[in-house]
Amino acid sequence: MPLTLTLNNVSKAYDDDKILSGLSYTFSAGETHILMGANGCGKSTLLRICALLEQPDSGSLAYSSGNGELQVGLELRRRITLVLPKVGVFNSTVFNNLAYGLKIRSIAKNERTERVIKMLKFIGLEHKKNRNALTLSSGEAQRLGIGRALVIEPDLLFLDEPTASIDNKNRELIEAIILQMKEAGHTTIIMTTHDSSQAERLSKRIILMKNGKLGAA
Image 1 (cartoon, rainbow, N blue to C red):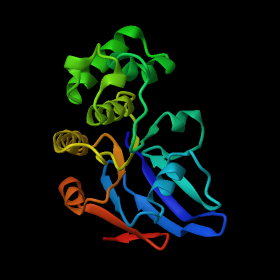
Image 2 (cartoon, helix red, strand yellow):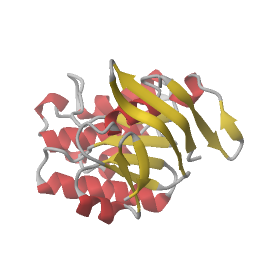
Image 3 (cartoon, rainbow, N blue to C red):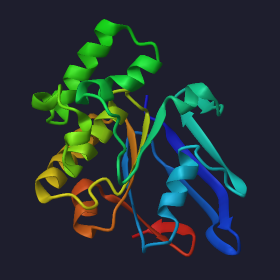
Image 4 (tube, rainbow, N blue to C red):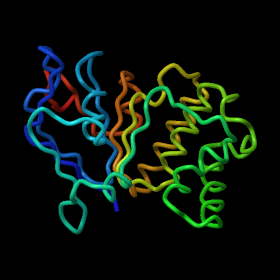
């Protein structure tokens, strides 16, 4: 079930540089939210905090589903995931890269195989399933990273500049993946981009980050 994420007066600073300043916002469940803003405005910092990789200096985050607010712990962490601009891949096959997250979650081998094959088709890498992932192009590796996040069926997905520094073909393929996810409505997506036309193609929920706060673009 997709999650709702509510930020309450969240602040973060590095040394004397205040990045987030009393930020409050609610990301609705099952929607695709696009964050925009200048370099250094705090978009990536916000995603890391929301993905539970960093702690805010003050304020709180609340994750909720139809059953109410969720406690921060392993169960919640396994329902959310973050894909970074430059995906790191393992020195193994594309298939094994996709299967890794399922394996550490003790998913049965038959189900792992079924889900990986389905994901290979979804991200357009079925023909490269036995290729060493280190030999993929940057665009293919980015698709693999997104597929590795999606195969675990997250309820909340963070995408930090998922099409940065890749060619138009892979950008279009990644946008198509995001649009299909948006249509399905099973996952809440929070994504950053500098491309205003891309933001408009992917969602009507475009949010501008400025001076450590969020508001309508």
